[in-house]
Length: 193
Image (cartoon, rainbow, N blue to C red):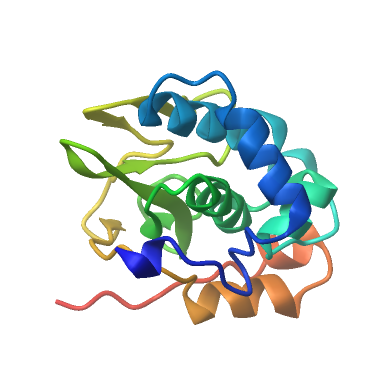
């Protein structure tokens, strides 16, 4: 579990602004699930999805997401991981491979979300990308309610729980300056089998 609790370049929860917010969100919570819910809802509702709101700059590091209050799903998952790890809650990164056009057909891209380790339950996935019409992600353990369902054989819930972001995601977020450039170059991976 140690790797899901440590800070890093992109999940940089040692940043004072993240530590302060993590402490604030945990204040008056009676249990771990309340802390998780407050952190999840903060990132889902207070950090605007870059593409939905057509916002720049492109963010990647958790502290930059918090500073600019915007990020793609991947960057938002970095901030959520940072807030939860700052509160001593093991948190990883997960990905889905989805159709870009929501049709189940090519082209495809990765979608970033989180997995948190819940006491008495195990790993639980949650998706703080931000709700909008047709998207209603919630924190409702033990039931997962993610932003997007898998609709076709070429879409997939990737089973891994990563301690650090995938290189293809970092490359996409750090190679482009504006939200529309990222949108035109969303990261993807080839499926095995």
